[in-house]
Length: 122
View 1 (cartoon, rainbow, N blue to C red):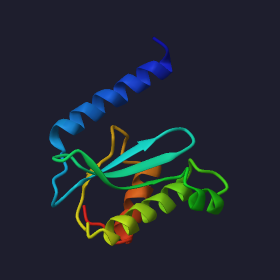
View 2 (view 1 turned 90 degrees about the vertical axis):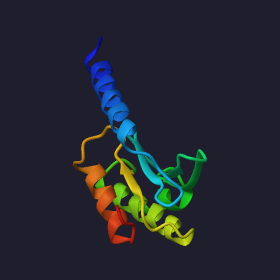
View 3 (view 1 turned 180 degrees about the vertical axis):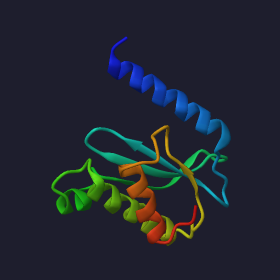
């Protein structure tokens, strides 16, 4: 097993441990994060109905135009702000934060703080 495979396995283990404890309800859906080396993907999910209520990504055309790089702290802040605006437009103010197995540090922290500053509560 390579070093990268071991790192991915550790993240998957952390993610499964978190998902056992965190679930989204219709009143308080789950804010899920996935990040690759180049992009961020956010979804607000109602786990009871299995539906995505709002989503944002650095691959969207309006976000791509604003950023020079899509995998850094600036991109995380833009996407966190965007998902918060979309969820508030749909009447979702409170969410449960699912960090997806990533450490609450760096880009994940910047993304969460940007969503909080835009009006989401978690």
